[in-house]
Length: 297
Image 1: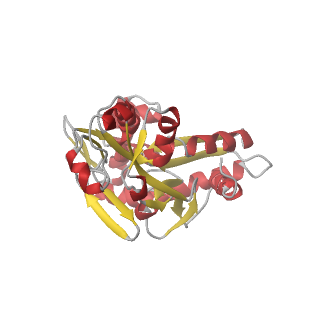
Image 2: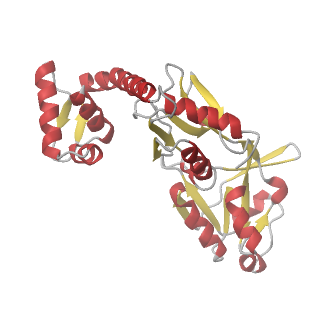
C-alpha cells in the first residue's frame, strides 16, 4: 500500500521529482518504488521520457479505482485516532482561490482553535477537479461548479456580488459610466481563470441583463486578483471582483464604486464531498460550519 501511495503521488503531480518533494523522499527512491510496483503487477503504469511522465491506460485505471480506497483507508484511520474525545488526523481540502481572501481563513482560525490536535492542508486550485482523485476529503467551489452526486454544505456568506470600482482620480479624468455598454470606452482590468477563459462581465438591473466584453488594458490571472485591485487603486482602470474584496478600498477612499445598481448577485460558496464516506476531521468541519452558518465570522 505504501507503493500505491507513491504511485498516486506521481500520477497527480505527473513527475517523480514533484512527487518526491510531496512525499519527502528522494526522486530515485520514488522511481525505484514505481518500478517495483510495475514489476509486481506485470504492466507499465507510466510512460517516461526526459521531459514528462505520462500514465498508461492501466495507470489511469488504477488511479481512478485506488484513489477512493486510499481515501477511505485514511478516513478509517482518522476515525480510529479520533475515537476518544479529541478529533485527530488530517483534513485535506481543494478550494478555489476566491475563498482564501477573506472567507475561509477566519473560519479555519476558529476551527483549529477548537480542535488543537487536527491538521489541515489546503490545495488552492481554480480548476474543477475530482477531489477524491486529488487525494482530498472535500472541495470548496461556487454552486455552478459543484461536482455532481456530491453532498454540499454552505460556507461563508450565502449571497455575494460582482462589483466594479476604480480610483477616484481615474474616474475624474473621464466620463463616469451610467450603463455597462459604456465600459467598452474605459480602461478595464480583466481577470482570467487558470483554464484560460476570461471571467465574464455580466450585469443585471430591474430584470434587464447585459453582458459586455471590454478589451482589458490589463489582464491578470485570477490568482493575482489582489494585485488587480491594487493597480485599480493606482488609477489603471475599472476592476470587477467580489464586492467584499473591494470594501477595504472603498472604506479608505482609494476606490469608488461604479454602476452599483447593475451589480449581479449570486450564491456563496459550498463545501462539497462524495457521499461514500466522511472522515472524522471532515465531519467535525461540517458540524462547525453548520454551527457558524447563522453567525457570520
